[in-house]
Image 1: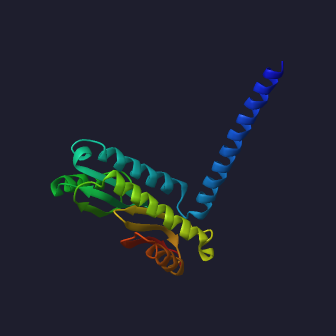
Image 2: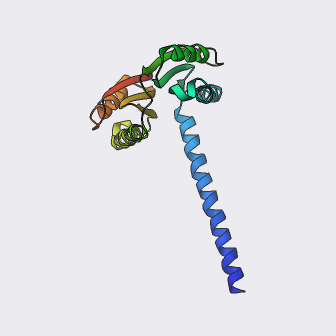
Image 3: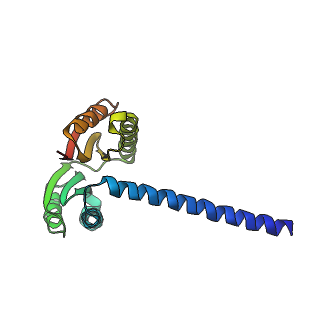
Length: 189
């Protein structure tokens, strides 16, 4: 009888823990939507464009000769990554421009071999350090800035004031391992 009670209590605790996680995740998502000036439709469309680009990059001939990802914001798409072959890249760009929701496309893909696992891990670590440093800057509390690192180049995205943009750029620029900072902000007036 005791083991059945223990099993029931354990099950309830696991369920409650799951609910708490869902509640917190839901609250975080709501907070992102509240601080994001895009409409729900724009957010959905941008996410869809990023997924479509990822799907395209996973098809032949791109899968073996390129590593390309995208960041989309209000229909403006930035392609990041590497391609061994310029002709393949041009073909990819032409197809990406045709995707529904792409209004403007900026190519930041380098002509070189795709990054190694070690280089990708280093980029992830740089992104983590930049995000952590941004979180500790009190003037940037409540400001949503997306950070993407590709080959030690940090890209900053978001809807910010020019003053907040300069603060974020300064923070990112001073992180060890950062080669360059590219601002891709939409400015609030």
